[in-house]
Image (cartoon, rainbow, N blue to C red; front, side, top):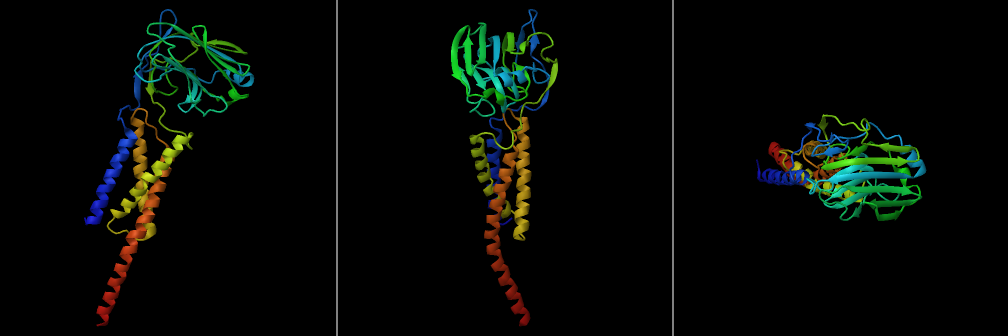
Length: 341
């Protein structure tokens, strides 16, 4: 291996090692597997939750259509959380189709209550959340009531109004079909630890008690497979900026993939070969994220990385072939002169 190829190889190895660190850090191994459900019903009818919880409706609640039409809903939750939680901001109760599409969610961050409400002006996840400080205390039952009525969003904790926010008209029209979930995210995720003894949703169509037997599916065991595939295209401005960084980071990868080849060949073949190799690298890096906690595979990342590699390879063939072609031409002329003599 000549000096150029050796240098290209080690630089390429270093860049890919950095890509692995960036993609998988902090290397929290969390592969899909079957687990025992920690969500269980107590003798007095409450629900207790541990590290791995599944307690959700089988389909979209029937009352959601009424909420979209009337823009009126009342959620009544009585919970006693564990302090501290194992994870940051686990979900206590939510109506969501996946990690990136949430209609409403109540979560816990230490003693603080977090509230996500999808409405006109927010992203599909209802960000940013409202924060109500010191809503929870160790060993204490806390009643949280969320109400949307006449364009006003109210939140009370133990009977005291802690939040009042006016919503734009049509805010609840943005809510999409999704299951109701207690004690976790809709697909895997970070289990909330504690007890719930009331979870009621009231609408103009009536009320639903989600602690009533049969209201939720609570299997003994289930297949743990959290959300790992990000939506396409990216939903937020930050994700789009990260996409640009991924494109730029693979420009040197494409450049060096041309550099490690013994004979670049034609410009087209060299660029296509570098692009195909970069595609394989990007797919492997993305697939590995399925096995690590809070890592997400994104098709947009693969597209950006391959595009960056093609740009880098195009630059490389201009440089490499631009240098080799004069040398080849000189060799051919030398051979022709030798034959004439």
